[in-house]
Image 1 (cartoon, rainbow, N blue to C red):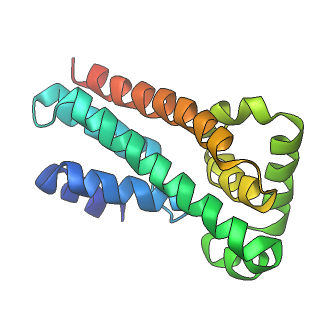
Image 2 (cartoon, rainbow, N blue to C red):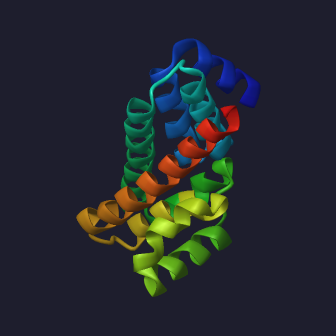
Length: 159
């Protein structure tokens, strides 16, 4: 699967980068950090440009986060417990993410750097019915630093 994702990004560029990162953010088994680093490598080689890749990456992550939030907001914890098993979203992971969000809401941007928590926090925020604007503001900060860091890291691999 990762090899297919990487070859599609190299072939089709920003659109596939957006779709792959979106699906990874929503919970499908996609190596998000690796995809972003690979996009950074393509930037370093001159096949992509840094700023458009950064913007596309941030929008993909925010779109995935928003979809997770809305899904959890409307399905609730029972619905997610039933359907979440298909994307490895267990009840214990949701409970752990809900506790993090309740106790340390301002730390949401740092959750993007924790692979299992990144997806779960957006579901937990939806279940807890946190204010969407505040949550998405925190997510924007997290997504920007997360995508920016790994994209930059990928450009350093080439040099």
